Length: 376
Image (cartoon, rainbow, N blue to C red):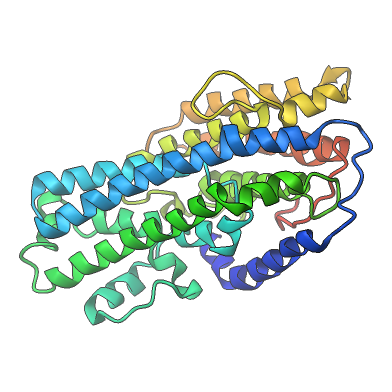
């Protein structure tokens, strides 16, 4: 599923960038008739969640680059282990920002370049052998990013010592080192660009676009949040490898972190926490909360079947977390041994689609601006 998205991604993304860029020219911005102060919410989203999350991710990426540079200069076992750990730290932290695919992240195709999986190992091998590649090409998005590093750090051979030999004694060791370094540098450059724009002019653009038009910051971000939840989180991490969209045919090799297999659940839970924290308005890496989708629903006294909708949503997040937490750390192994548990986790996530996409977005008067094409 993730690779299929690659084929239509450039067209979709260019259309989305063009549509969002029109927001600066959209003078009416819409009128927020429910009197909830969206601009205060946008201020807090930017300053307490989005920018701090990106800054933390940037710090982790900078550490990854430092480890990569050190390993390139001295490709030994100790430096290789540090590099692996820095990759894992950055990959986990990435889960906190992947949902914010608007503005600079969208225009730089950040998510497409950093986390399209399964990675294209055939093309990666060809790139290394030839030394001829262009990672800035959107069609090379599945030959780079964290999934490519997953392959380069864990998938080249069965044992750690054999993997290390690709960077030391292999006849093509220089090319392997160069490609590894280029992939890390590409992550670093793109991340720095996005963070710089958020810390610069884009923050004001985001905060000041506070109306209720289709192109307002709230509407665009909530749509991207929902699209991420459905397509990249629910489907990408669980539904697609578990066979939900392939007539029950399991595709375990499509799990995230396929080569470092015991990382799949960690990434999934990190993403789930990030999604719920944003819904609740939890300040990044803190326990206090700010104006949020949760408080917005509470302001409107939004009920469903006699219960607070915000409580139903949070309870469903918690139910999903319980079902994911009992899965094997290795999703590849989980699918092969007991795929029913994966499908149960998927169904729990799907139940929240109804609350979030149908009930919440309707209550907030936000039109759905994307298609998940999966029948819900």
